[in-house]
Length: 112
Length: 443
Image (cartoon, rainbow over all chains, first blue to last red):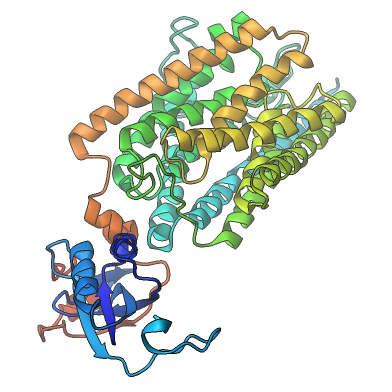
C-alpha cells in the first residue's frame, strides 16, 4: 500500500475530488497548506512598503491506495490538477505500512 | 410665527436633517461590512476598498453635478432635468420669512441628505458584482451612475418631474433608490457574468460561502439602524406636533417591518430547507426595510408588519429564483433591493389613497427600464474601453492581490530585503516611500 500526497492548486480541488471518486477512491484527506516550488512567492505592497509573500496557498490531498490502484490514482490526480502553468504542484508517494479502520478494526487493504 | 420661533424651527428641522444624514451615511459602513462578510477572504480587501471608494466618488460626483441634475432650479421639461454645477449659498433670514412655501431648513442640509442617499443607491451595485468586477471600471461606472443615471430617475419623482406629476408615490425610495439600484445591479451582473465555479454545467447551483459571517451580521444591524435616518429623514420635517408624531410613527413602522421581514424569511427558509440560514434571515430584515420604505408613514404597525413579512417572503423566493436563472448575486442585492422594492411600491396602494396600482406599476417599469438600460449602455462602453472582469487566473488567486496588492489576513509574510533568488529589493527607495511601483511578479 502507498500514501499518495498531492500538492495542488486550490481551485483544482473539486476536479481532483471528482476524478478520484470516478475511479472509486473511497476516502481522502485535504489540508490547506502553503508552500513554494519554482512558482516562488511574490511581493506585495502595504502602505508604500514592499514585503514578500514567499508562500503560496495550495491544497494537499492525501489518498491511501493499494498497490494495484496506485498508478490509476496518480494518473487521475495528474490529469485533474493539470493546467500547464508553473504552480500546478507535485505528487509524492510514500510507502504505507498499515491502515486500520477505527470503527471496525479492519486492517490493510480492507481498511482503505 | 414670530422670528425667534421661526429661527428655532428652522434650526430644529435642519438639525434633524443632519442627524438623519449621519445615520444614512453610516449605512455605507453597513454595506461594507455586510458585503465583505459574504465574500471569500481572498476578495475581502478589494470589496472593502470598493465600498469606501464608491462612497467617496459618489459624494464628490453628486456634489459637482448630480444634486443639481436631480433638483434643478430650471428643468428643461418634466422629462429632462437642468444642468448646474456645485452648490449655491444657503438661506438667509429674509429667505425663510417669506411666508408660505419658504425654505424651512438649510439647503446645504438638503444637499448632504440627498448625497448620502445617492451613495446608498450606488452601494447596492457593489455587492451584486462582488468577487469578479475590477475595481476601477466599477468606479468609472459609479461616476456615471451617480452623476447622471440615478439623478435623472430621482428628478422624475422627487425633483418634480413627470412621475411626480403622474401621481407616482414613493416616500423614501423603495423604487427611486432601492429598485433603481437593483436594476443597475442586474445590468451589471448580466454584463460581468457569474463567478467561476458558481453554476455547474448541468444547472447545479454551487454555494460559495462567505468568509466572515460575524462581520456580515454587524453590517446588517448597522443598515437597520441607518434606516431610521433613511425613512425618518424622508419626512423632511420634525418641528411641529404632527410632524414629530409622524417621524415617530415612521420609526415604529420601519422597525416593525424589518423585524417581521426577518421572522417571515426565517420561517419560510426553515419550512423549505429545515435549517435557519443566517444570511437569509439577514436578507429578510433588509427586505422588510426596503418594502416599508415606499410608505413608512401611513400604515399602522399591523400593516407594517404585514408589508415587512411579505417582503421577507419575496426575498427568499427571489434569491432562490435568481440562482435558478443562473444570475449570480453573492449578497442577494438584486433580491433585497429590486424584488422587495417592487413589492414595497405596490404595497403603497393599500394605505395611501393618493396611489393607484396602475401608476405605481407604470412608474416602476419606467424607472426599471431607465436604470437598467442606461446602466447596460454605460457598462458596455466601459467593458469595451477598459474591461469589466478580472482574468480567470486573478479570479482564482483572489482580487485582493491583483487589485489592491495586499491581503486581508496576511500570514507567512516577511519583511525581506532580498528577493527569492538573491536580488536585493529596491529597499531604500521603498523605505523612502518614493516609489509606488512594484517588483514584477515572479512566475
